[in-house]
Amino acid sequence: MFLIGLVSVMLWEASTWNFNAKIVPMIVGTAALIFTSIALANELMISYNEIQDVTDGATFFHAHYVKP
Image (tube, rainbow, N blue to C red; front, side, top):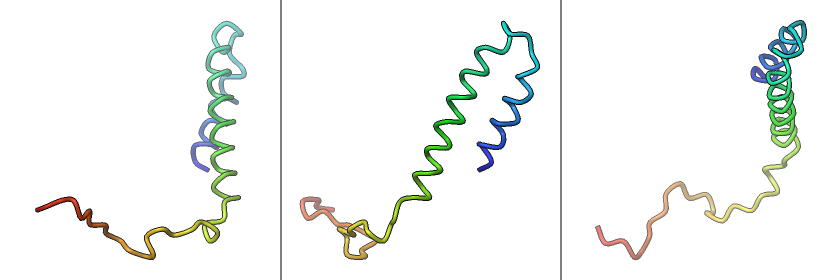
């Protein structure tokens, strides 16, 4: 959320600049705003309860082929 707010403020500030000075920051800022919004929407929409836990709750994994 912070990054979306920061990019939005930066786009608002750059909107008053001369066209030749603001074209690249506006394009890059708009792309950053779009991608961060998509990432936020993805985090909000995904249901972690439906993802299968292949570790069965294990926090550590020991590879049997490793000989310490």
